[in-house]
Image (cartoon, rainbow, N blue to C red; front, side, top):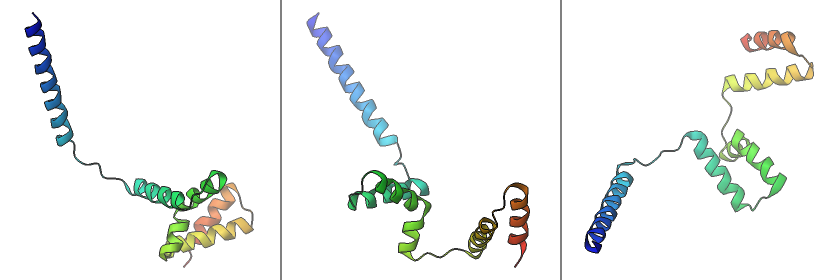
Length: 112
């Protein structure tokens, strides 16, 4: 009786180990999305700067938006992005809201 139980237990362990190894080997390595990569990079930068609390939140927010990394990398805005930024600034100075803002933004973005 003890021998049968021992043999069954050992077979179960070998089977579980084989299934576990096969599952690990069969699972492809997970590739990160661009957003996940950005999050990882920003986390590493914040950790290397030993940021904590509100300072870390502010840094992470700007880093994830691409403000910190883009400025450091020297990336420039595309012409469309620059036009959107300019039109947004103009709408903000005019304190436009609702349909007025939509109409203004549409007109502003269509202008060359």
